[in-house]
Structure formats: C-alpha cells, structure tokens
Image 1 (cartoon, rainbow over the protein chains, first blue to last red):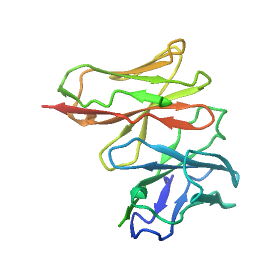
Image 2 (image 1 turned 180 degrees about the vertical axis):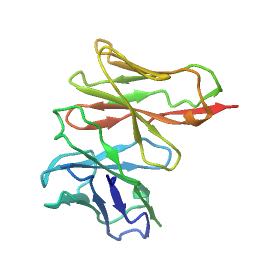
Image 3 (image 1 turned 30 degrees about the horizontal axis):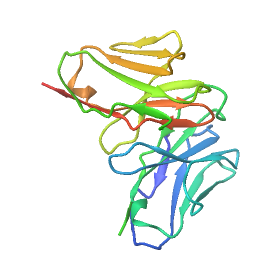
Length: 116
Length: 107
C-alpha cells in the first residue's frame, strides 16, 4: 500500500511570493491534515480537510489556505510568504473523520520550504 | 498555556537504561492519545496508542491518567535505535502535538 506522498520535497522562495504544496493521501483515507514544523519546534496544526470540506483550521493567518479535491488529494497554498514561513510542511491522512474513532494519522515525508 | 506540554529534554541515557517521558494536556474533552516517534529530519510515525487501562508493546509501556490529564511513556532496555524525538499527541476533533522530548541513547 502506497503511503502519503507530498510534492515537492524541497522549495526555495523569496519573501512576498506564493507557494502551493501538494499531498496525496493513502488510498481509502478521506481526511487530510496539514502541519507546519519550524526548525526545533513542534508540529503546529494548520488545516484539516475531510470529504472536500475544511473542517478545522489552526491559529494561522488567512494567507494560509488550501483545498481538497474529489480524489481526496489536497493542496496547501501560502500567499505573501514571510521569512518565518520557512519550515517543514507535513501532510497526514487518516481513515476516520476526526472526533470519532481512534485511527492514527499517517504522515508524508514533508515539503521543506525555505523563504529567503 | 500550551494544549499539550512535554519536557523537551534532552534525555541522554546509556544503552540498557530505562527512561520515562511525561506529557500533560489541558483539554479534558480529549478523546484519544498517542505517542509518535520522529527521527531527525523525518516525518513522525506512530509508536503506540495509549489506552485508559495502560498498554504495553514490547519494551514500551504507555499509561494514561484522565483525572490528572497526564500521559506517560516508559522505555525499558534502551537501544541505540531508540534515539529520536518522542511526540505526545492528544486528539479531540483533530490531533494536537506536543513539542516532543528528545532522547539520545549512547553506547
């Protein structure tokens, strides 16, 4: 069974630019979660999508947005990049819809974004 | 106050040692609990779920105290390969991660 995949693996952008990160969940998983992990810090919850809808978002500004497609893959968009956006962006998928069930999340390898 | 708090460490222990990590969470409505392991520059991977009655998986034992909102992970007979960051995870409607506890096991 293929795991969660993310693209690209690495990305270098400059301040003010926009970036789109992509994630494909494990087959059969309907929920996709996005996290930001800055160097030396813990995972910060960004967004949760399930069945094409945004279910919850973390404490991030509106320039962080995303969507989920009918095939359950997802995109994370970050506009007007700032230096502090440099981080590892992790996508995870799970079978359950959150709030119910106890199935775990499976993570992709992440996209490392550097903003110069 | 952070929703999930862990001692960041680092914990530096010799091979064969027993080490324990603690985690506290603030939301009493939390429903599920996990320990994840994250190797340097890699994605987190599930180590074990934590059940109310406590559970064991080989050298790893996890315990949950709902009254105190406290989770623990015990690693016995530490191996070099146990060196990693251990993340405490609490789930209500979504997963909230602690910042992790760094463990280094030395020969």
